[in-house]
Length: 314
Image (cartoon, rainbow, N blue to C red; front, side, top):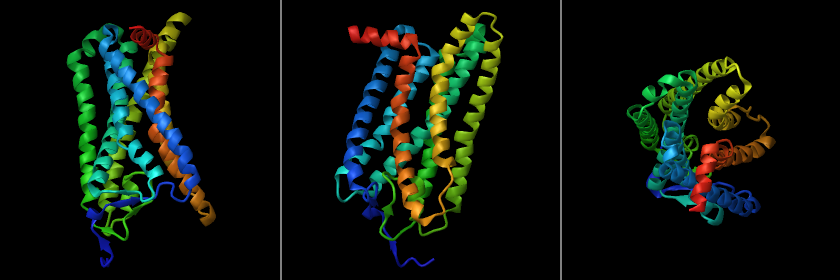
């Protein structure tokens, strides 16, 4: 390949974002800023109540605290950069900042996939084997489960990011995205990216496919167990203990399927509209899901609602 146009990544990257739609930038700046503040407040409160309220010192709420911290980290790795791009005419990002942003978003996304699987296992044990729950989900078990989720996500991110950043880049280093999204970055490479693509496919199977199957099987057993409960009140109480987690799973994976499962337009005139649609879908995926998580757990969980009320009264 001709490398006469190869450029040094040290010069940084240019993020297009919504440059072609300046009117949308101001509107989305206000909207995303408000959503980001809700994310910080909602998830911050959840972390506080799971730490301060002794009644919430259980495996389920320990995982929930991890999920809230993860959502704060995930959004903080990208939202400030997005907000800045809405206000800055020259939307440049240094190479080192691009690497850090890509690493954090990859790590948080992969960790959340594994963590949701761990939470599904917790609900499975609680409903299908309640008598063994204190033994199976002891502190010696659920803390390593959470740690392994973070370790797996970070390891995957190190592999994917290091492979992407070793590539030579061509042209003017323009990234057609809000952030250093890895697929957009790989399009700038002057070298064969087949290894990167294979690595990402394998990672997607491990961090998306396996947790989804694990969650699905867990909830099959959970639903079968709930349906065997003779009383309607007992079934309702059992389902209420896992409804919040199930809702979060549906929102999280449903958004991913919507993002990557919709057909691509072959019409050149529709390509620009689809490009804008893809950007906005990706943008809202990064903020809507972390914003909804604390709302879902607050609305559908009496223990959390009680703990939040007690925290506000103090």
